[in-house]
Amino acid sequence: MQQHSNGDILWFQFEQFAGLADRITHGVFARSGGVSAAPYAALNCGLSVGDDREHVAQNRDRVIATLPGHPPLMTVHPVHGSTVVEIHAEDLADPEAMAQKRAVKADAMITQARDVGLFWAYADCTPILMVDPVHSAIALVHAGWRGASQAVGVAALHALGTRYGTRPQDVRVGLGPSIGPCCYEVDEPVRAAFAAHPLANQHSFFSTIMVPDGHGDERPSLRLDVPACSRAQLIAAGVPAEQIEVSGFCTGHQRDLFFSHRMENGKTGRFAVVLALR
Image 1 (cartoon, rainbow, N blue to C red):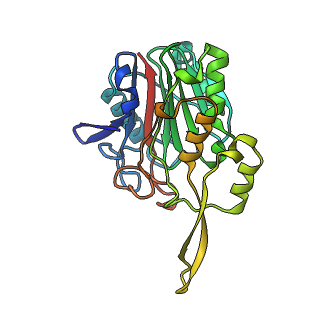
Image 2 (cartoon, rainbow, N blue to C red):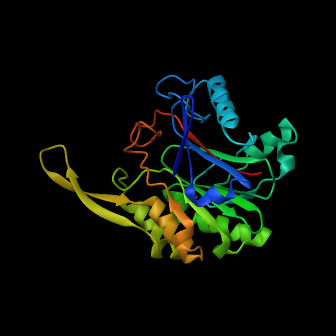
C-alpha cells in the first residue's frame, strides 16, 4: 500500500488502484489526526462505540477533506451477513432519504453513482474494496468471520455482475487492514460455520498454535485468517490472483496505526475506509 499524510492524518491507498486515480478515489485511514479522546483517540469514525457524536462528525469531515474529490460519505448498517445493497446518487439527495438508506442492514455496498463515498468504519473485520474499471462500478465489503463464512465478498462480486455486467476477470481488489491469525483466536463453532457453506468450506484458513495457558503450561489455540479466506474465495470466483492486493497490516499487532476491537477489549474506535467513483 502507498502511505500518505496530511498533517497528523495518516492514510493509505492500494497500489492495485494506482492507475485508476482519475476514475476513483479511495483511502484507508489510520487512527491518528482526529479529535476524539482516549480510548477512541484520535480519528475515530464509528458512531456505535460510545464516542462523542460531534467528535465523530468532525473526524468524518476530516476524512472527506483529505480525500481527492471530497466525496460525501454513504454507509449502511453492517450486521455480519452477506446481504448486498445498491447505493444510488439520490440516496444522498436529502437527509431523510439518507437516514432511511443508512438504516438498511447489509455488509456489502455496490454502486455506479459518481461522487458517492462508500464508507464503513472498521476495527478488525476485513475491508474489501472492488473496482470494475470496464463498467465503472465499485463495491465496498465489510467481512468479519461471519461474513467470510458466508462468502460475502463473492456475494458482492456476483451482485456487481447481475446489476452492472461486471466480469470477475476485470475486477481489481484491495483487502484492507484486519486482524490476522497471529492475534485472532476463534472457537469450533466458527469452524462449523465455514463448514456449512460449500465455497467458504473449500477456502477456509484455520490453523492451531500452542499458547501459554496462564498456569505455566501451554494449550492449543485455533486461529483464523479472514483475509486469506476472502482472497481465496474471490480467486475461486474468477478474480485473477494478481489483481488482488492484501494490505499486510494486522490490526491486532499494529494498534499504533489501527483500532482493534479484539485486542483493545471492545473499548476503542473505528478507522475509516472510503471508496468512490469520480
